[in-house]
Length: 235
Image (tube, rainbow, N blue to C red):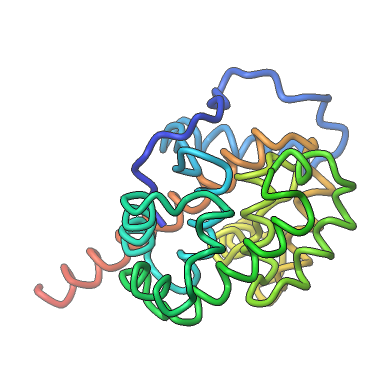
């Protein structure tokens, strides 16, 4: 995922004072790695979107596909003025699938968008203020019961759309932590999430920028590996 629309979220700068002193060596090391990544890659402006609902829709549409494809589907929804919960929920599933075809597995994602939107309308009247105020652990468990929403998607919605302190411990994050000897290579999603949330200040802006930087670093490393392999093949 490589978002291109600037987010309205405030950027966490390299010189910003991180809440609380680093009382343990793991916390200190994670914050050093964060600052190194920020100096190297710069602020990432995640997640792109003009509203919290649009960000949540994007998190669902980007499941198992590149962000560029998901972004085309988001743009198609925007052009039809469907990026509002009540409007999207009123669209028949088959019609919605045609609109989001660019995102791939569009019939499945149409069902998932309907499931999330129906839940949001029933639970909070379609408003994200409720997601920002509800007890976090119980809210996360409830969202995980919505059809088609796994931990990574739920945490992306909570962090980027609702600004809750939940770390998105995706494959890029786990590979980075393993490469730096902070977690084993076979650590699962929940283990990585719990590790980061235990050792970092509970700051959504920090989690936002740190996760985005981990994705940027992972993509840069992958491009470097591909370029190197092509150079070796051509020599």
